[in-house]
Each structure stands twice: as structure tokens, then as C-alpha cells.
Image (cartoon, rainbow, N blue to C red):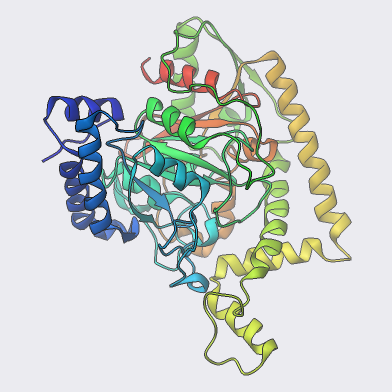
Length: 474
């Protein structure tokens, strides 16, 4: 039986020594997926295909022609298109829909010999922070089955946490890679907006959506970013900047200047053990010679409302294409065009998605556009300018990833604002388009993982990853 590997380097060592084969690895993960089906991390497992691919890659490794990711078995979030495979964004409205093309990132992962073992459960259309809005039911946290996995990439995070695959790919709109990574004790990276192609990713909010890896090691996150990043003629929002060798060995970073949000230690809304983990992190960094200073961020209270106004407006526009006419679910009760639209959308979308479409449509409506949407766009600019000003003086901004550890499944049903406020620290990177990473910092007294977040300047992933490699070894 294959062991629980912490990095691809470790796997490659096992492959070279003959202690393991890719086929054995795939069988190990398939066995774990079956044994942990109750976690609900995977919607569909590509069992036969993964085993066939494993034999091909084992042969390539023997010949010395294996790609950068040979030996890495990954899960992909159910909003990432993979040719001739189903993709549903965990929604009834796309149940049974088969993609006719692959996303750019899937093509790049396969080109480097990664094996895609299945598609991971997520919040419906990536809308949520707990993975409870999925048409396929909630994902359970491996550390405690009564707790949420985080969202929206909850299935991707739990798949890695429970060793159902080695790494997973999620998407991050307002924290959807970083927050579940924090809840599951993993590394979650959101690159700079425009670093990775969004072609073939089912859109939620186009000016925020960004693909990111969830891994057990910073080195694997760096390698996956290196493989997935880079210009793509199918995505006009993509940067043409050269992609650095993120996975190359880097010298230990020098002494850094780090700002932390004072509010994250003073706010009554932040869990006591989360505050304690942040305080210990600050002490540890100072003890190692780094300058760590408190700052106040005057727009903190505006970040979550600004994000939700803009993201819901974009969702209302993006999701108008699911109408029961073109593809996906069509209501059997429909009798004419109008009833096809009304019934297919009301039956096909879940409660949370409907809430966000309605709010998004409201803020875009003639009487309220200036009052809400236009004002939110102006506030977004202020938040970005203020954040960039801080990063002129400091190398990183340090915060908790989430204000509390994983909470009980079911809490969100009584109060949806609970899950909206879970994004308080993650939305800053999303609103500003800047890169951020969630790193594990131990567990609380109940054994639930806690995470801290580092936010860096635009396209500064190399420095962010290098410092993260150093930080996790402190």
C-alpha cells in the first residue's frame, strides 16, 4: 500500500527507487475514495481512465520521458471543463452535461503527465463558503465529520486532506481555495488575477474568478502554478508576463517587513484561538528577525459588502445563459418559452444561487445601479489603492485566513450571513486581484485546523511562495 506522501518530490523518490508505481498510487487513492465515500468529496471518479493513464505514465517514467507532474494524481473542481467528461458546477441545472472541450488548465496538467482521478464536489456555481449549497449535498471535514469543509472548493480540499488524491485544483472568487485549505490544514494559493487562464472554467464572477492549487506542500503549489500559468489566446484578461520557474530552488529569503491587520486581533468576531495562532505567528516571525507591525485598514468593514455586491451582479449576468433552452436541465412542466425559462431556472438553481442572482439583478437594476453597483466599483478601487500603498512599504500583509475554524454543518441554513462573513479576510486579495496564500498553523483544542494568510504585491508569487516555503519550516 502506498503511504501518505507529503510532496511530489517524495513520490518521485519512491518511483525511482521502485518502491511504488503510478498504478499502485492510483489504486491506493481509489481504495481511499471508496473507504471515505461518506465525506462526499468526489461527485464522479474516473476509475478506469485513471488506471489506464497510470500504465502509460509508468512506461514514460521507465523511458525517462515523464513530464513535470508524472506521479501526481489530482482531483479537479466540478466547475472545470474536461473534454468528454461531465461538468455540472454541482448544480441541478447542469446535471448530466458533458463538456465538448477541455479548459486550458486541464490541457496543461495532462501535457505534464498529471492524472485526473475525478471531479470534486463544490458549492453550487462556486457560491458559498461551506460546501453546503451543492446539489450533491455537503462535503464533510475529514478532521470532524460534523464540521463543514469550507467552500466553495470544499471537495477539492477534503480530497487532499483525506488522501483521496495527492493535490487538487480549485477556483477562488472570494476565498474559495484559501478558506477550505485553512479549514482542512492545507496550503491554498490564489495567484494574481490574470496569471492563470480562465478558459474552460464555468464563470461565477468574471473579474474575480481565479484558478488555484490545494496541496500538502508549498513546493507542489509552486510547481502546479508553474504548469498552469502563462498566456493563452483564449483568455483576453490574461497577463503576458513571463512565468518564472516557481518550483526552482530559491535561496532563503532575507528579513522581511510584514504588516498585520490590527483588527484581526482586536475584533470580537474573530475566534480566540485564531487570534492566538496569529499572535504566535507574529512572535515567531519577530524572533526570526523579521519586522512585523500592526496597521489599521479603514475600509475593512466595506470589503465584504463591496465584494458581494459586485460578485452577485456578475453572477446575475453570467448565469443568465442557463435558461433551459440551450443545454442542461429543462423543466418537464414547461409549455411555452416563458414557462421554460421560469420553471427551468426556478427548479434547476438551488436556494443560495437564486438568492445571489436576485440580489445581483437588483443592484444592476435601473433605480439602484448608481446606489449600489457603481458605488461598489468606486470602493473596490479605493481598497485596491490602499492595499497597494501598504505593499509599497511592506513585503506582505498577514491575517488569519478565516475568522474561525470549521463550523458545524447546518449553521448556514439559519443564517447565510455567517458564511458571507467567513470571507472577511480573504476578499481583500480578490477585490484587489493580488496573490495570497493560506498556510496551516496547527490545530485548535478540538483538533480543527487553523490557517494564516499572506498577501503579496501584484505578480509577486515567486517571493510569496519562497517566503511560504521558509515559513512552514519555522
